[in-house]
View 1 (cartoon, rainbow, N blue to C red):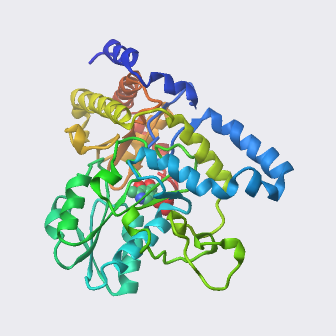
View 2: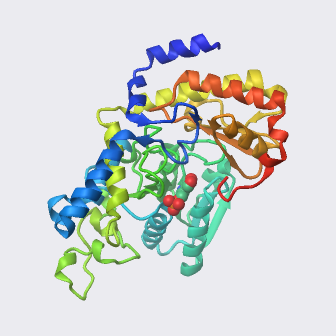
View 3: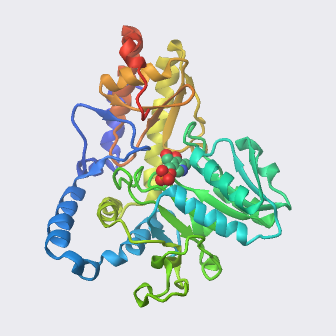
Length: 408
Ligand SMILES: Cc1ncc(COP(=O)(O)O)c(C=O)c1O
């Protein structure tokens, strides 16, 4: 693959026009949209309006007049379309960790006679920590197995199967349809974390009959740093879903100020407290970038960008001791690619200094995200070229590159 061939792929890209909707500095190649999505320019105007008019002028009236109170479900509906959810099944708010606590607790309560939650070692640490807490509080076992052993770890004792679909480190993608069906056949509830899926890969929660799901708003959904997360509750569970955090925004009539908690009838019962209006407004506006976009087109571009990076890494980076840790078969991976290298940390820092922003994950992973809405094939080509330069020049050997930042 030459740079001209990469440019030809860009010329044929039906999503190419989307890049203009983002504010991306000219002097960097941004390969970290899997961690913090880039800024959609329309978010700037929206936040300006929310702060100066809705908050500054209209003040508390905006809960009604600007629809602040409906933001969690309005934003949830927009996310729902991107993840194949039925109408009225997604609500935005809280963090992924808190939402996972809610749905795994509720899922375990649906199988009170079963003692085990199954997950895998590829899951994100916060998911493991949250589920350890739930297991300890409920007297359950948290069974953590290798990603390829998940199927055989599910049995008659399994209350809940809880997995992250795309591994934050390796990019390996679980087969959601097959594992959900397997869990159901064993009588278990299936919970999925879509943090590295939503906005990059097409999923069909309804078609897969997933029970519960959660995910982040700040990665491929571009909602901004610390954006609200989301949760999905399948229609068949909504009447039974017991949110373990019974806050007033999950009440059927919060402004009755009733002393008894009566859960809302629909997905609203999964909410807890006052919505984070500023960050929720940013996420709401950012999601408009997806209007009219078919996620299968986004996934196809993700496959093309990641395929190109893997091919170039094989051809140009193997001699510098990089090992591709991400599956080569496109349906088996998400939209990021990880390269293992014993000096991954200083290499990533030197590459950032050279204008290519990726990140480092313990113990030896250089991770590169390819957000399909704003990355071009020529960016992939240029990024690999600069990485080769960093290796050949020895720029990564500068002791300053080894200094660990708080966020890697
Ligand atoms: C799979 C997964 N789940 C959860 C999170 C983070 O959750 P929270 O929104 O609570 O910080 C991440 C962050 O990268 C993640 O990769």
